[in-house]
Figure 1 (tube, rainbow, N blue to C red):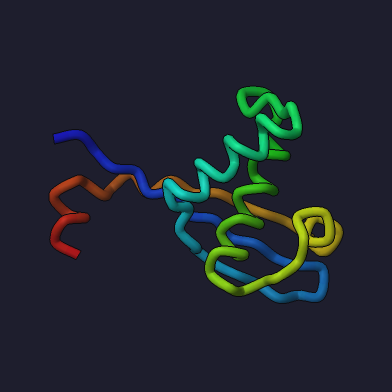
Figure 2: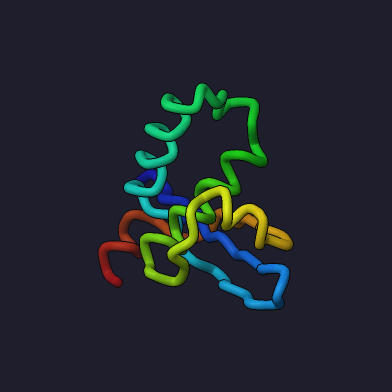
Length: 95
């Protein structure tokens, strides 16, 4: 069976607030594609823009922040991504 790699994101804001290991969902990726088309971003090249938007989309979807994307970017200290390589389709089905 193919592995399912869950993408996790962690964000630290400049005020020290931290959001750790939040899962990026398929819906967040679709939202990114729509924004990229509207803003003419090249998601194959603009890695930092992609990370920033996905971080905002996840935290916005979860209700953790209500900032606009631009305001969120002004508040961010750092963002990190991690892909969980140990999850399999079988393991996820058993959750």
